[in-house]
Structure formats: C-alpha cells, structure tokens
Amino acid sequence: MTELSVGKIFYRLRLVDLDHSFTYSPVRWIELSDINLTNNIQVFPSPFYNELSIQIVSSKDQLVIIDITDIFGMLIRESSHQLYKGTNFISFNDLSNLTTGVYFIKANFHSTGIIIKALKQE
Image 1: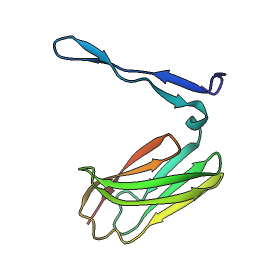
Image 2 (image 1 turned 45 degrees about the vertical axis):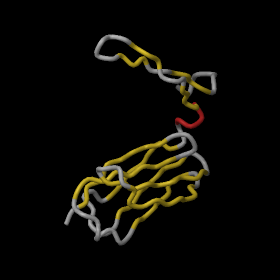
Image 3 (image 1 turned 30 degrees about the vertical axis):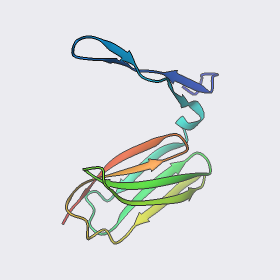
Image 4 (image 1 turned 90 degrees about the vertical axis):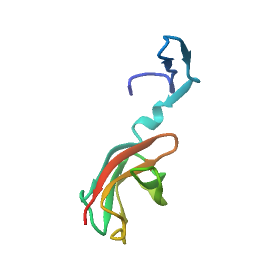
C-alpha cells in the first residue's frame, strides 16, 4: 500500500438483507498516511493480574488514547498518552479489583483504532 500515490482509499459496503434486497453504507476512507503510524503493538502479560503494560512502536510522534473495556463494552479505564517515534511503554496499575475475564485494549490514533484482547486472571 505504501507504493500507492494517493492519500486516501475510499470504500463502502454493500449490505444484503435476508430477502436479498440491499443498500450501501456511507462512503468511508482510510488515510494511507495513518496505515503505518504504528507497526507493532503488544499487550503483556496476558493473562494479567494487577498490572498491564502496552508496548507501542510508533513511526512518528503522535497522541494515542487507550481504552480498556470489558466484554460487554463497558469502559473500565481511558487515558491519553503522547507517543514518540520509536518504542513506547504504557502501564496500567491497580487492576486487581477487575473480575476475571476477557478485556479489550483499544489504541485510538488520529483516525485509526487497534484492538487487542487481554485476559485477566485471579
């Protein structure tokens, strides 16, 4: 994709109903400059107990908003962080009060979001 000379890729979805009728979604786009904003995100340890760390390798200085949600979509924690070009570490402490189960860590960049699943242990 980095070989394309355009700045955006436009797309829309064709939504087909059970009776075979269809509609189209609104047109959306992907900024090609956002595709390589991060080339690596890792969440560890998984499973976690009290502390969860996120490693983000960023290709440029940028802001990221991290959301931690439970399996029902309820927001557990949200925080914003300034990333710098290279490897960045973000830690969340005092998570021992969370119930055992699956949680989703979403890294929200300018116009892109990446979701990673993490497991909470007792």
